[in-house]
Length: 102
Image 1 (cartoon, rainbow, N blue to C red):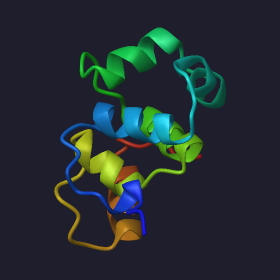
Image 2: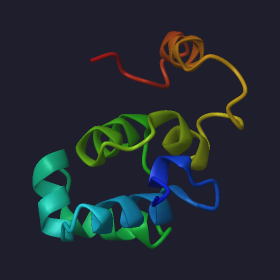
Image 3: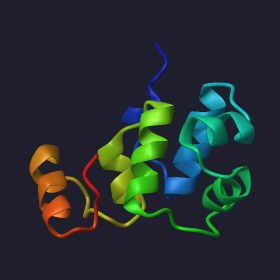
Image 4: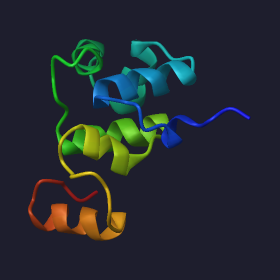
């Protein structure tokens, strides 16, 4: 049985994670750009670790790619290695105004 990407812990960056999820969906950068309303050039910079997405962008990426939001926030540097309840962590981030509520 194939291991899902969300179960993999070998990703070293949010860019690598994003690229692998995008490829798993058989999407090009333009497909992801349409789904997230971000430019393909910005997405390319994220995937190549030349830009770190803000928390709102990570939310868009996770939603569009059906990714693991907690893991993506962790890889982007917004969370320490997850060892707590994700709801509590997101609530704390929201209160710190690092994350815009939908």
